[in-house]
Structure formats: structure tokens, C-alpha cells
Length: 335
Ligand code: GRG
Image (cartoon, rainbow, N blue to C red):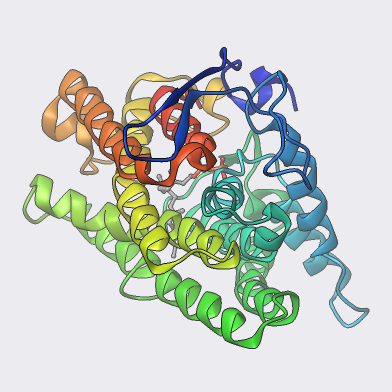
């Protein structure tokens, strides 16, 4: 994936500094450690996590190896949905979180795949006529356009059990597998992803137009899965309770910032740049950050949230450099 296609920015120069009383901390180091070398030296590469994307794509592809009992067309629709060219922010975050707590990124791969499966299902269902009714996703026709509505519903349905089966079978330590399954189940459920989506749809029909309501929607619809990706990565990386607390203080503002930026992009970007339809939220009268606060204030709010996220992981030292880069990417992304 090139820079342009991944929407990522070029790497910057290394600058190491020691934090008083803390771990040695590199504020801007250059990515490119190989998959098995999470503690190794860093090298200049095109951007800061391109080197991990093939590993993630391979793990996603491997996870699509079901048996003959899966009908061919359904299998194709699941693959089409899961392997479509997304940014892979959530799986990358899981790997980064594992690294940030001193773990191996490979240990976090089952969590990365499972979270992306839930994300992919949510996109397929969100695009359906009964929900957001979209025909373009990740630069391609949405699953119900490429196949048909019933197949898209069933492909989305399939991705949910596949995610939990993946965690149950690929995480070797049973206690850890259960912890990840519980975490992902909560993040996907009626108090989180599904609840946020329900409330988002309800908000289209009216009710109070406040920042508090908008925030409550996005904490669940967008933030919960981002929180889960980071926490599951931290768990699989062997993080301590203190590490996990720092990661949670990072992911909460990050998840919200992701949505604020998404709203700003919907407001101002082009379809071709985003790979999905833009301007729809405003047209449908949806609650959005630029709609409530104005575009400039929304962009400023996103910056404040990103600063909070970056501040929260200072305690993790240099191993969290990539999480810092991700926060900057979320702030600066153009798609
Ligand atoms: C159907 C239960 C259910 C939930 C749907 C995903 C979703 C919830 C709605 C999609 C609309 C939307 C704006 C969601 C906010 C989260 C978001 C910005 C998703 C897109 O995530 P990206 O940008 O997508 O990471 P890619 O395609 O890069 O993976």
C-alpha cells in the first residue's frame, strides 16, 4: 500500500530525549521494525506502520479459510467485506498497544483480526438501505450493491461469530481468550456499538441537539471498538493493570477525536478522497460536530482530544511512540 493509498504521512526524523524520572522517551522516531523485532532498532521506511500492514492482511486472509459447508456466494461476500481496502486502524492499534506494553506484536494478531471482523460487519450493516443506505464503501460498491441485500446481511451476521471463534481458537491461554472475548462482546453490544448506532438513527428523527447527546452516541458507536482494539492489544501484549489504565486514557479521547475528524471530513472532503459518500450527514440532518460547533471549533476540539491522548501514554515511554504517531495520523488524516 502506498502513502497515498494508505492515507498516511511520511516518517519524520528521530529525536530521542530522556524524561525526568521516567523511561527514555523518543518523541519522534522512525518506524519500520520488522514483525518479530518490536524491541529492535528503528529504520526509515515510507511511513510508520506500513511494514505491519502485510502481516495484518495475511492474518485477515488466513481467517477466511472456512470449510465447504459455507455457501460459495456467502463466503465471497464475507471476503469482499473483510478484505476490502480499509485503513486497518483498529488492528494496527491493537498491535501498537501490545508493543506499547512491551509485548510481541504477533501475540496481538488474533485480537486485531477479531476487532476488524466486528468493524467490517458494522460497516456492511450500516450501509444497508434500512440504515445509512450507502452505495460506496472503501472505494468500492457496498456489499449489498456488489451482492444483494440478503447476502450482505448474512455476510455481516457471519463476521460476528467468526470474530469470537477466532479469539477462542487463536488465543492459546484460556483466561486471556475469555478476557478478550468479554471485552469485544461488550464493545459490540447494545450498550456500545449497537446501542450507539440505534441512538444515532433515533437522533435523525429529532430530539435534543446537544453536544452531550452527540458525545454519548459516538462514545458507543465509534469509541467503544477503538477502546476494545487498544485494550485487547494491551491484554495480549501482557500489559499490567497500570499499563491498561494508561491505554484506556489514550483510547477514549482518541476514539472521540476519530469521530470528530470523520464528521469534519464528511463536511469538507470529496467522495473520491474518502472512498465513501460525503456530505450525507448534513443532508440527512444528522447531529455532527461541525454542525453543532462549527468547522473550526470542531477541528480545534479534535486537536485538544489528540493532545490528551498523547499525554496519557507518556508514562509508557518509547514503546508507545507508534501510538503517538497514530494519534497524530487520526488528527491529520484526509480519508
Ligand atoms: C450496524 C451495529 C452497526 C453499527 C454501525 C460503523 C458504523 C456503526 C457506522 C458507520 C458510519 C460511521 C461514520 C461510523 C463511525 C465510525 C467510523 C468512522 C467508521 C469508519 O471507520 P474507518 O474510517 O473505516 O476506520 P475503514 O474503511 O478505513 O476501516
